[in-house]
Image (cartoon, rainbow, N blue to C red; front, side, top):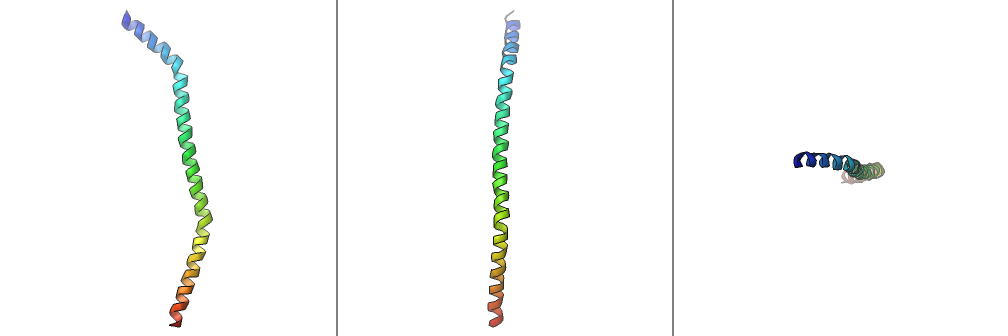
Length: 72
């Protein structure tokens, strides 16, 4: 009798708590995806912004270095 009552109580509590548990799981999933997306966005933005500057700086350095070698 007590086992049947415990199973019924578990089912009732499970039905009432299921939306809350699902909402918590959804919230955590959303936060994790949001943080990962923000990090990815900042990384892509930095690469797109800084890569041309780095390439131009490298080209200038390469030309100056090559120019010094040709004079010696």
